[in-house]
Structures are given as C-alpha cells and as structure tokens.
Amino acid sequence: MRKLLALAVLLPQIALAETGYYMVTTYDVAGQASIDYKYWNAHFKNGGTVASPEIGFGYGVTPRWYTELSTQWVQSNGRHTRNTGIEWQNDFLLTQGQYEVDVALHTLVERSRRREDGYALEIGPVLQAQLWRTQLNFNLFFQREMDNGEDNETELAYQWQIKQRWKSWFSPGLQGFGEVGKWNDWLPSKKQSHRAGPAFFGQAGHIKYEAAYLFGRNSGRAANSFSMRAQYLF
Image (cartoon, rainbow, N blue to C red; front, side, top):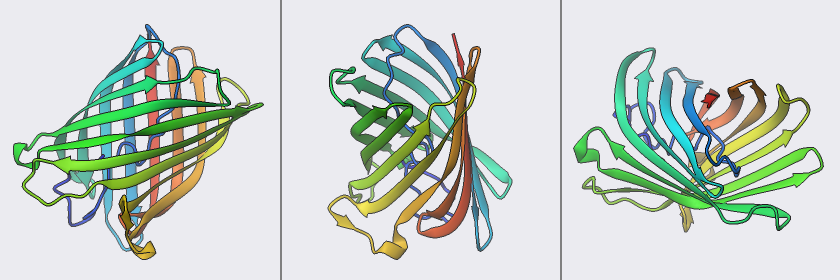
C-alpha cells in the first residue's frame, strides 16, 4: 500500500511501496518463522532519490495462513530518515495444488505513525502456476487510504513474475509492478506507473533472498529502482 510519505515532493502519488517492489507468492510455510528484511530505492531521472528499509517478523500459522508484522522507514536523498508506521500482512491459501493455478487471498493493513494520516488497506487475489521449471505469478491488488480526512479512491495495482527454477541457491527471472490509478477509472497512460526488470532468487541454509533491478516509471515519473529481500528462516 501507500508508504504514507511526507515526501510528497518526490513521490506525490507513491502507492504501497512494499507490494510495489516485493512479490506476494503462495507457499505452505506452516510452523516456519522468519526475520524478514526488505529494502528498495528509486533514482529519478531528473534528480532525487527515495529509499525505504523495512523489517518484520513472519510466521506460517497453518498450511493455509501466513502472517507478518513489520515496520518501515523512508529516506529522501540520503537523509531525513523517519519511521512511517507498521503493517500487518495476512495471506490465505485457497487452493493447494488441486488445480493448474494456485490461488490465495492477500490482505494488508497499514497504520501510519502520524495518527492524522490514518490507515491504508490492501486486498486482492494472488495467482501462481508452474510449467515444468518455470514459475508464473500474477497478482491484482485493490488499495485504499482511510480516515485521513481526505477524499480517497480505491486504486488498482498489479504484480507479475517469471521465475526459472535452476539451482536452489540461484534462480533467474523477471519481475514487474505497476499502479494505474482508480480501479474503475484509470489514469492517462503518462501518469500511470509501470516498471519491470531482471530478478534473481535463492536460498542458502537458513537464508532466503531475492533482488531485482527495475526500469520504468514510479508515480508517473521516469526512475530506475532496486529492491532486495532477505529472510532468516527458523
């Protein structure tokens, strides 16, 4: 969802930065706990950078339910770092291999550190399919800010991923993310955000990791972005 940034000068329409840079996938991780570190940055073509580290704790409550509580920070041009709030993510597996495509329901609630900014909500389907060694993902999320005194709309964001399973410690792939504006009245194409690029994934012992470098538009502005995620599993 939205990072609820005070950095509106750089990102006036930044949408849910977490799910704008990190894929939500469907896995049975019952009984598995994790320390989850995430980081992304965006370098705008006409100057200015924004970066955001995040740390959380995740747990597979049942074979169908994954939950994670996290907190984030945001940084503008290498300084002015501040905490933005907390998030509670819950994902529910609806199918587990009985169909060609696995389906899950993703939910996310964000509470801004500044009480006047209110809450942000995100919900939507998570789809995953396997073609031999190739994993395909596509997600569609509805996002809305609430209780911040503004006239907010429900907005639409998407994610896609192609991952080629090669080695457990290294698998190459592609990722793409985007936001199109109001779910039933999209923004003009020049104001939409679409970014995609190469990604890699792997696991070594208790460490699971992924990273991507994305090209395209962020909040309607040309930018190159880097994202990474590292989980310590136990």
